[in-house]
Length: 287
Ligand code: 13P
Picture (cartoon, rainbow, N blue to C red):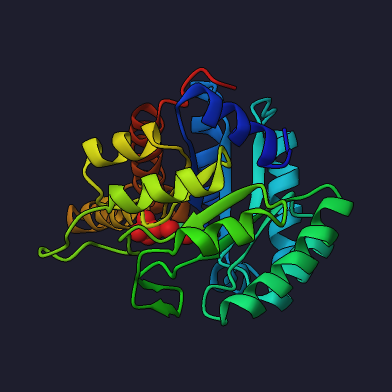
């Protein structure tokens, strides 16, 4: 059931668990995530980066696919279709395309400009019934061409942007996109606590969910994180499973070259990964 992210995140925050935001890349990805959420009776957020949106022939195609799939699969758990790290222009495109939630990532602008643009988008999104995420303190690493050095957000800036009425806040706490380097210092819980104190009870978002040790994820959730984004881990398990299929020469026997057969192990691997994450985040049975 398509809905905004607002209510599911408020419930998560109050219930001390988090909703997983899993990036989608194609039909298999979307189906695997929706079916797992339904099976586990968990709310879920489908994240769409601008790059993935382009790959899937634009946000209108994505929106039509997700809505049709939600209906055809009889999905009853809350599902938010959410723009991930959106530009100003991309945010408007997703609003028009029928997304139920957007992230405007203005973290690379000077803070006053970020606030000005976020303010405008909050007003438009809320007028049309969408939820909106904003970001301060860039998340490190690279995702679909969006590159940032990674930093810890300034709690005062977090408060300024939260005061605009956003529904969820992504604030850097030492997290980065992609695989963490061996010398990664871990999440900065002092920063997270300071942000929490400055912003009150707004649902916080932990980007870069891939590879953060489980105990750190749990601690972050206990300190106010209500949405955890995962992308790279699903890509890694998908590709490894498809590689296993090909390397075992399964494509060479009994019409094993059928793309539905080739991609099936990857799809199953995503389902298992999403299940593992939903259990870790505590969202199972919370639909
Ligand atoms: P990972 O690719 O590190 O899991 O990060 C996902 C993310 O934060 C999407 O915005």
